[in-house]
Length: 270
Image (cartoon, rainbow, N blue to C red; front, side, top):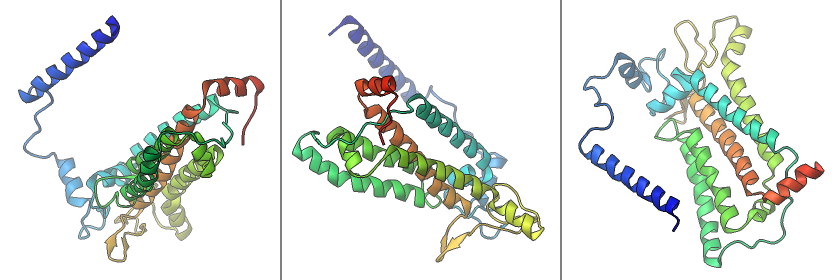
């Protein structure tokens, strides 16, 4: 072991021990207040409160209500940051697409079999996090990030060729991502557009109806709270995040010599 590696290992071990001691002594972090602030109280009381239709988001998950209703503009801007990051990656690696491989080498048979069992479970769990994000802990970003684990696992255990054989293409991923982002923008403007047509008041990113803006997104489905735009945004965020991260994972799996060769010849693989 080199001296540098030994120094890094000792530093990390020392940091872990120091943090453990600090946490055990209660010396890290701010002690939470016993009483909630007015804003926190309002969110907890109204995130799901059918008896207060002008303030509620019909979301049992207060975090989702904050992210996609009470402070939806902040989340839209965060989504725009991720969009810019993926767009920058697309620009840097434009023209680079690894052609499908007919040889699926990968790891051992046991690992491959385990992967084939795990991948559907990962996809279902990721979708569930988004679909139920307004009812329980989760959300579109968390679900999309979990779904992106599936292609990373497939590439590691089966090879990148398995991704292409499954029909996952970089261009399709970008189309799905841009479509989801466009739909997020349209949903944000749906109520004010409809309100303009009806000559009533409506707000951008409005979810439930307000005292002066009666239009509302669908709030119930078969007796289950739907949370209106919170549910819709979670599903669209799932598509946008999973497609964007999967695209970046595919680029990371491309061999460096293939990238250099493609950029040198300015080739595009479809």
